[in-house]
Length: 268
Image 1 (cartoon, helix red, strand yellow):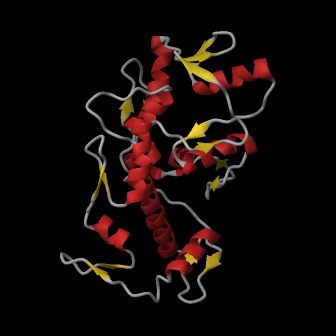
Image 2: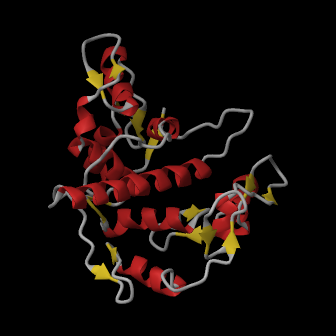
Image 3: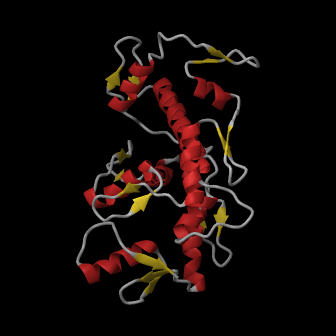
């Protein structure tokens, strides 16, 4: 691959990671009172929502090409969206009066201007589009209209339900472009990408008990349990406790004989 192509791919991956980071931030609602987390790993994820600013080089295939402008896409759904919006031929009626940028959609224009006219009636949060406000309101109302057809678990967001369904189907659509590993959840792929990154050598999280250091805070927290003896993951069948969630998951299958990733553990 040429240096120019590598740079193009790198820029696109960085942009995707930043977009996902912003989406994750919008999913976490900030209140004056702290929000409890049912699992320690969720708290770690909540604390690590800052955008990934380091460079990650990833070779990504883009087999789907627009016949009108030649732009390549990694997924056919992205190409269809591109065609539906006709991004290369459509007028851009929404012009920013502060810069030269123009946009196809009013929602894009509002996002660019940080305009958030849709205000939550329960808290101070506001949103650029009404659909995001509707999803946010479910945090206050407790509404979970999306139900898993396999186990009847319910969810506030369709995207969360679809991710959950993969624990039943075994689907892993998020493929690493550097190795053969694939993941059911995008956030797991993002964490995995660090193993291929040059910045993986930078380990800012230093253990205060020994010389070990880590590139991610979550790994440091897991490691520190070796020194503290903390075992926050408890088997719901026999009460045995574990330092890592993976260990509890593996142990639980002794009781059920299952190979599924779905494991009802409880947080101590």
